[in-house]
Image (cartoon, chains in turn green, orange):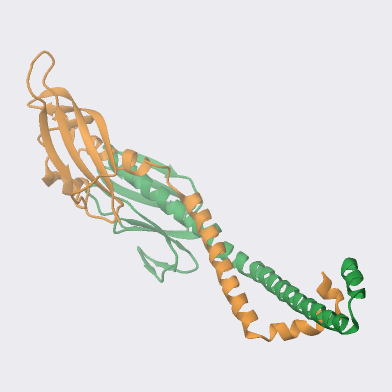
Length: 166
Length: 170
């Protein structure tokens, strides 16, 4: 800026006036741009603070757990069916926030606040359940386990039973 | 920042915010940001719940073909099931329905047995099968594995190779 002012001094009065006008315009445009950038940054920061916990709560945490548990249980069932003899297996993982549904060759994990268990069936459904397919052998399992702290898989004489321990 | 010190900045701030281009630009950037965050969260879920590679298709699901008596595993007269031993009489397409019933599982299988001649005798390899799962469609297989098994044929036990083609299914 100092060099600019030195150069302005050698210009004529008219030229000085025009030069001052144009630099003021440039400075005015620059300050508007900074304001725009600053406001957008501020709004984006506020948006991130609001949006990210919502996404983390809905997509992280429980959804990840539901998906992992559904896959784990489905693979456990596939393994049990591949084994020819009687077997009893404890699945020691706390799923007491969920309802586990094993039917139609799919393992589904629902959050317990979205569904109501009536006998061996469910009313309501989780909008984003964790689910994964499995392949039974000579069987068609149908179980609903309400808020289990532990699961016990038992195959006896080729018949599978799944018990949820609360 | 200069805007907080500048009187002009304080005057012009509300003017900028009242303009449509500002809100359009903000909307686009906020949408892109939300999508990026959503994608990152999805990647987190995917990473947490990912099944180790080859575990489901090559280990868990395949083992039933030569371990389960409802599939092709040999079961002797007293009811003992011999893991890893295939009964040639059972190695037929009709037995696949019980072994691998219809479901939305992500993998399809195509099996064939190659039985070399007995030790000390010359002759061609014997080929049995193929037997495939309900969701198998002809075409390129993403994986092919070979399991060393035994076969029982006419009461005789011989070493064989179980060739398994695996395909990902949508």
